Image (cartoon, rainbow, N blue to C red; front, side, top):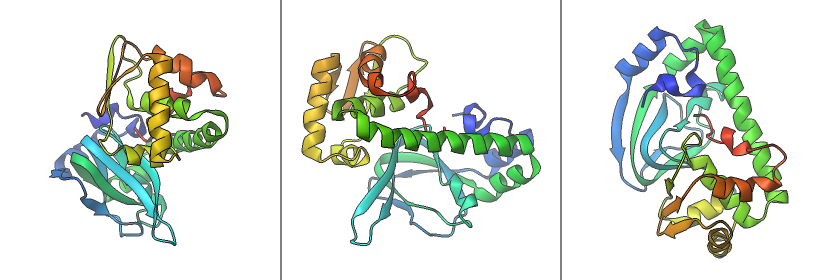
Length: 235
């Protein structure tokens, strides 16, 4: 994956990308691997080449609050530069993953020296904040099947035309937790989404003839037209 194609890195200098390419490290991880913990000193940020990563915080009673579940193409850990160089959440591999790490120092240097890059990164973070605000809105006005549809749209290539295939992590309880549902509610809602839209569900794979099957159903209750266009957080 070419980092120059990620919107969060728009306006990055050639020297910045050369540094990332030179100092990057690619590694493969099995399910259950903890990449870092909340409040750990941050030295790196990460790009998911394949697999799934869960971002979470632990509550006072020891349970987990899932911040996000990220798939291939997503960046994470970069916001530590605004958190006194400490990770604001924990990160765990939830499906076998190939992950590239980059030095956080290179990102900090580019922000200091490149005003256009810094402004673009702030814009990307603002988009992510809007995404979080929309999720709060969705929990109020969308039913459970629509929320699942929105989540699936976020995972899809929204420029793609024709048939679409989306692969979910096998542990559906993770997705349920991410969407604020109990596992049994998620299962019932997924079945209803299938009945309402005609999508095909084969284990952890979702197939549809086109994205319109989900857009027309899930976006009807949103306050803006096709808001899922911006839901690829930090990508």
